[in-house]
Image 1 (tube, rainbow, N blue to C red):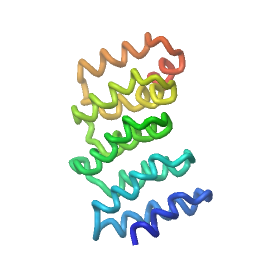
Image 2 (spheres, rainbow, N blue to C red):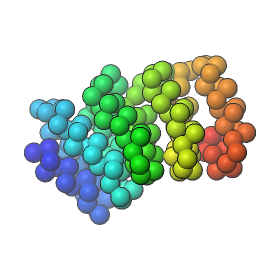
Image 3 (cartoon, one colour):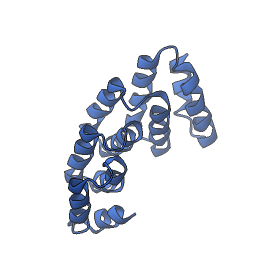
Image 4 (tube, helix red, strand yellow):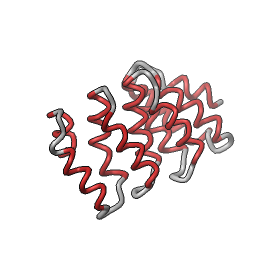
Length: 158
């Protein structure tokens, strides 16, 4: 059942993908591990809409302490295709609690990714995973405002 629903995450129709995101939440109750694996695989899809649906679905089928989901996402942070790495950053933040140090560290490292898109996503998402009043995060955000890439600086402000 999980695979059948996940196939709809790849639909070119955004409304079908939205329905699949809601449905995956229901079918994942029986087999959460398989659901996480099947959805995480869609983070590698060439279509940005499919990757975005996978991020949303992962957030719905996991809990912030779901180490298996994070492990699946961590692998994709190292993926050779930059779109997959950018989607993995978004997915990691979506399944993490605010203040999760491990997730903060991973997102922070992505600020040095060779691809601008990944750096921009990491800059935009860093504050979402940082603990409130975390001095290290505040310094990082200050550093981002002086980043070499103008688009990264702008993402830090957004």
